[in-house]
Length: 43
Image (cartoon, rainbow, N blue to C red):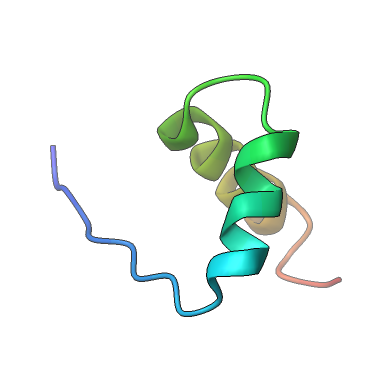
């Protein structure tokens, strides 16, 4: 398993994200990545 470091430059945005998540941060980020990959990287 590879581990990656996540650097967050916008602390206010990060605080809002942490308030919105229902699970741990790693799980939420993995879900965001899966959704982005499955949509072909399109917004």
